[in-house]
Image (cartoon, rainbow over all chains, first blue to last red; front, side, top):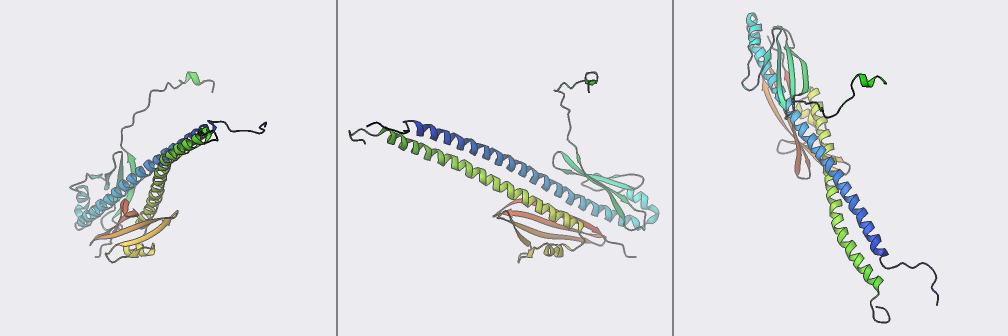
Length: 159
Length: 139
């Protein structure tokens, strides 16, 4: 009897299975790589946030100590400016300018530091100080990438 | 087997293919599960970090007592003195645990809220939200 219609030959199912397995493997590896990249990014952000808030808490503590020194200095108004300029703290370097701007920095991770500056008010004024700077600054060395040959000024005349 | 007693080659191939596919599926499924787990941890980590940052910034800007602030934010005081708040993020439950520390001096108050963010039983973030409020001197 003559056979009519399409007949699946030997090997077709193997080829189909290999194709499906390859597709699934590719998708699995891609999704894993994507998830791992997201997880790495998240953990870096968590580390940054922890460092930042630890630095802010330290800065608040330093401000409390500065305020204590200001309160003590106000007890003798005649020598107030000299006392403020002589404020020192054991664990942190304070820089006091002649116009009573007290500035300090707190490390925030390896590449950043939190720079804070408070302006001390005159003796008897309230509030005793005002925060004039509270910023994160990158302290890591930056080296420009000179591997690219950028066009010079003369070569860009056509623009 | 066919009528002549020889095994049907198509049937044998199907069995081998099914075996191969099953073994491959087991391995690939593990990769998908690992990807899903990492994806969940990164979603939870990212959202939990945002929530903790939000609470820390609002505490820094507020003038309320830390205890009143935490209760206002939906935290519940627990028996061990800590404050607990559970938040659902995309069907995943994040637990925030806050411990208040207060250093009060005649010239000002330094309030610190130690925020710990948990997913399950493991903490993945701990931040101190500190705020110093100076007091006006009394003559």
